[in-house]
Image (cartoon, rainbow, N blue to C red; front, side, top):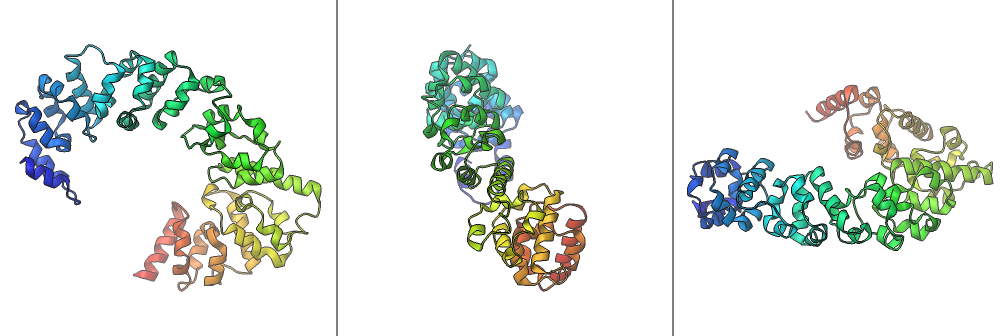
Length: 401
C-alpha cells in the first residue's frame, strides 16, 4: 500500500478519492513511526476520529515527521497537539521548529507563555516562518504580543516574517525609532495594513516632497493621506499617482490637487492643452478628475488623445454604479461621434475599458460583428450583474450558438 500511496501523491490528476479509500481502512492504532514516514501527506486523509485514535506515544515519537506534513486540517492539528501535550506541559519557542505545520494547533496562551526573544529568533527559521502563514489572526497577534513584551519594536521589525508584520500594534509603530523606520525600510515590500502604513509614514513625511523618494515606497505608500498629498509639489503628486500600489482614494486626491494647481496657475489650462502635455498626464487621474465640463474645454481635435490615456486605466477602481463611469463613456461617445449600434472595431479599441460602462440596452445594440472584437476588454471589467449580465449572456449565445 505504501508504494501505491507514494505513486498517487506524484500524480497530477485528482486522486484524493483514491487516497481517502486507501487510508480509510488503515488501523491507526497499529501505526508505527516507520509507517507514518511512508504514508506522509496521505495521513491528512484520515478522519478526525481516526486521528483521535492514534497512540499518544506514537504521535510524540513522530512529531518531526508529522510536522513536515503541510495539509493537515485545523481540527487534525488541534487533536495532534493535544496528544503531544499529554507528555509536555508547556511548549517553548524552540519547540516550534519541531512542530512546524502543527504549530497552528496551539492556542493563544501557548504562544503567550513563550519567551519573546527566543520566539523572535525562532521566527527567522524559514520553515517556521512558512508555517506561521497558516495561523489565525488571534494566534499571530499573541506571538507578536509575546515578542514585544521582551523585545523593542525596532528590533522586532527587522526580524518578523511577513505573515506576522500586519499584527504589530499601531502605538508600537508610532513609537518605533526614526533610525529604524527609514525610507529604505519602507521601500521593502511588506503587507502593512492601512492604519499601520499611516503610522509609519509619520516617521518620514518630511522626506516625501521628492519624486525619487516617493517613488521608492512600496506597501507603505497607502499611508499617505489626502491632507499630506495637498502639501506636496505637483510633480511629486504625479509620481505618487504612478505608484502601482497607490489606492483609488489617493489617486482621486492626487488628481484633485494636481488640476487645482494647474487651473490656479493658468485659468485657461484645459483649453491650452497640447497633445504633448496630455501625454504627460498620469492616466489614472482621468478616472476621477477633471470634471466633464473641464474635459470639454480641451480642443475637440485632441479628445482622441484623452481617450488614449483613458484606455490605459483600470476602470474597475470606480464603483459599478459610479456616475463617473457613465459620464466618461458619454464624453468618449461624443468624441468618437458614435452610439452603441454604430460602434466599429476601431472605435471599440479606442474606448478601451470604457466598454465596461455600456448599459444593458447598449450591449444589446452592439453590432454582432463588432462584439467579438471587444470581448477581451469586457473580460477585464470584473463581475457583471442584473440586466447587463443577462444582456451579455444573450449576446454571446446569439453570436456563438
